[in-house]
Image 1 (spheres, rainbow, N blue to C red):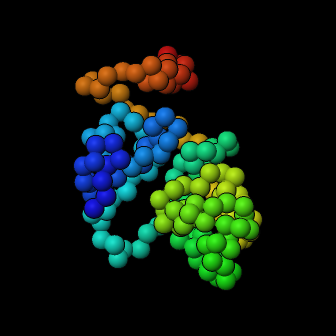
Image 2 (image 1 turned 90 degrees about the vertical axis):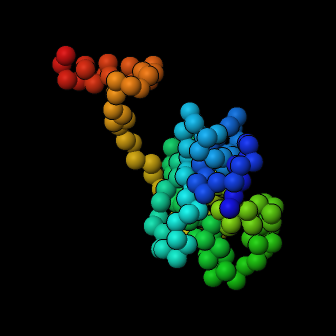
Image 3 (image 1 turned 30 degrees about the horizontal axis):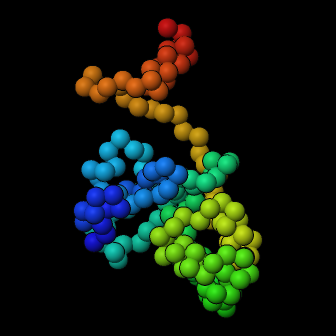
Length: 161
């Protein structure tokens, strides 16, 4: 069972959040008030087949997203090409430990590293982000934020109110 990077509490549900430009794996309590990049549920059955889920790519200038199972995609492509972690690291001019951490899904690759891996291994890790409209419900018991007010005002303009 993983531990929270902030408080050290063991947790079945990890929230990957950005804290001062660093990604941290935290418990639900420490993630309160933060927008998670990814939620990892360790209580689920490990034998179930995972779908290709996307993660907001924290370093992407274009707002791209990266597939959730990026580590296994990279590892399979590397093994298919007959490369070791060290060989791959040398070819893309990165550290071997970085490649290992990425393959274990412990680290989301920066955009420049992801692009080097895609090019060398002939794989696709990033996909174009879908622009979704914020469809937050404005409940009476929830505090209204400035963002909520702006969305509400914008939607009233569109509705002609």
